[in-house]
Image 1: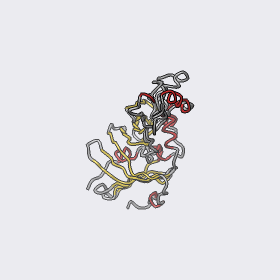
Image 2: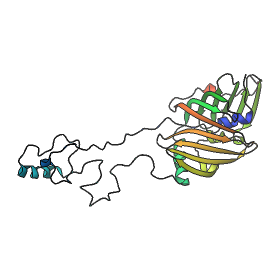
Image 3: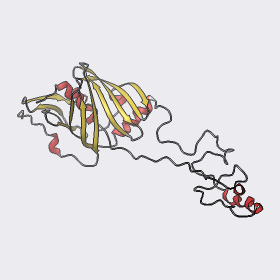
Image 4: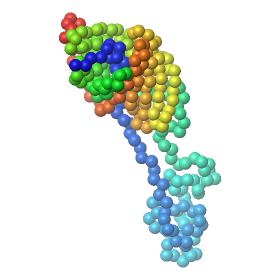
Length: 281
């Protein structure tokens, strides 16, 4: 049977918030007409409407064909380089912008983005995968109801579970028949359980970086049991979802966790958040 140390359990439980992916938008297609006859292409810079069903002057005498496009120049072609309207807009500005930011977010922008994300829901349940410092892999279910309630339930062979009932955090080991109680304020779990999160107020933001679509925000919590915990949140900007967090506990042990199959609509069963203070099992 496999068990985890209490500090490893703290690291596993720290910052387990993630939402289902946000809406993904398709980029507009840049459709260009092909094989235009010479009689319909005068003047050469005149753009055809999209999609190009049929050139308006096809089959007409040259004099009539030259006059036909005048009826189609009132609206510029959508989602194209500004050829006709270049006198109003600089050529470097496209008609459509991608959803992801064109430049890395500043520290203030990153904190604001994550605060809004975390404060956008009050309940959460789903699955998690944890990798311990020694490379071992553990899986389980997580349940959160803010403020104050949470449960990490490991799948066998791990015999540990972590429960917060709004006041205390219990780390239970069914195999060893032990139960250790802590104040929520002593553990990184307080970041999960606060009704309103403010990452910059409740911790120290030490770094922000962006690689592709992934925003990484580094935090330090100096009030956890045993000293300072270092936390990295890896957030998917394109999907608007927290994908992974990494916790280095005060002893220097690193734990990474990924979450998936998340549901923020269904209310968790309240039995998941009960701590039995009278008996261990």
